[in-house]
Image (tube, rainbow, N blue to C red; front, top):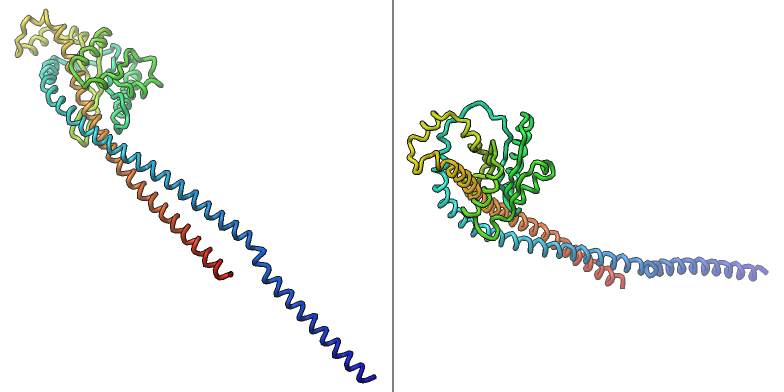
Amino acid sequence: LAQVEEVEDRFCLSSAQLISRSIMLARASMSLVRPAVRAPGTLESAMANQARFAATLKAVKIRMRSVSNIQKITKAMKMVAAAKLRHDQKRMEIGLPFVRPVQDLFQRLPHHDKPDKGPVTMLTVASDKGLCGGINTFAAKWTRLNIFEYEAAGLPVKLFIHGSKGTAALQRLFADRFTTTIAEAGNKHPVNFTSACAIVERLIRHNPERLRLTFNEFISVMSYETRHVEMITKAQVEQMDKMDLSKALDVYSFEPPTTECWDDLHEFYYVCSFYGAWLQSATSEQSSRMAAMENASKNAGEMFEALSLQYNRARQAKITTELCEIISGASAV
């Protein structure tokens, strides 16, 4: 009986060891199976990362292409503006010596310090095209400030606008003050005296009592200045003292006499003043456009470099991720 009991104890011990070993093997097998269960999730995340990197690279590549095209356009516009600037500057140099003697003649007329009380006609010279910096903005700004100043003093204001950009900038607030607007005057043909005569003829029909001219004066290729000139009208000449007027004009000889040619001479003064302002505004427009396109090309180049850096970083991150996935898969096998 003692021997039978000893055999039974050994059998129970060996069975217990077998059970424990089987449990350990099961746990080990489960640990080996778990990575295989997680494999589909890892593959999906890898595919999602690749899709994300591909979408990012594609979006950056499209933006780089668009910025490069914009840079090409701005460089071409700069070259066109530089070519037009040379022609406009040449016309200005030829035309201003023809304009200034007439302006000097009328500046000799006696001026009085007493302000006039009649309605003010504001002649603003702007451009028909944009992408030229602050040319039109400054002209519209100073016109707007003068309108507020005159109306605060109780003087009615009328607007005579040359250039569609000036009209667009002022019509929202002052559309009821417009008398005449001129657009597309110098697009098909360059600035010329004949076109200036046709434009000023419309101004003469209104017979302004006071006239203020706003334009951009050309200083150099890199700078311009917005000027406001108080022009002398026919109504103001009629109010001048005849003795002072004859003394101011004694240094000039007129044929026929001033009594016969003064009206024509005054209209000629209107045309010359507008023609000179138009020449300087056109030249300032092209110089400002050339500078604006140069700055735009520079900014586009800087943006392209930043996008290239972003694209290269995303591409390198994609390559690194793919290498890590390949190495991880090889080590798992």
